[in-house]
Length: 116
Image (cartoon, rainbow, N blue to C red; front, side, top):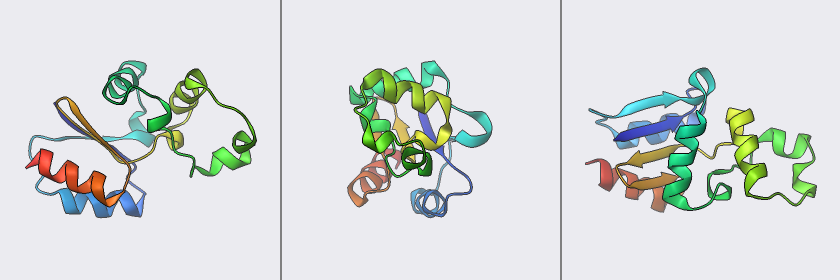
C-alpha cells in the first residue's frame, strides 16, 4: 500500500508532492476533504508506536485552544487528530510497512527512496 496523506492548500505539501513524483500507484488522500478514519490513524500509529509522532504542534488551533499549556496524552493526540485534520503532521507517506511523517529533509528523502 502506498498512500500520501496531504493538504492540497499547503504549499509545503505541494512542493514535497512534486519532489516525490512520479506518483504512479500512489493513493493521494486529501485530508481536509476526505478526513482521516480511525482505522487509518490506527494503522499509522502502529508504524510509529505513538500518536504524538503524528501530531502537529504547528497547527494554529494548537495555540488557539491553549493546548500548548496542557499536558496531553496519547488518547488526547488521537482524539484531536480525528477531530480536526489540521492536527495531523503532514505530509504522511505510507509505503507498505514504512512511514515518513512531516517535511524534514530526512523524512522526504526516505519517502522518495521508498517510493522509487
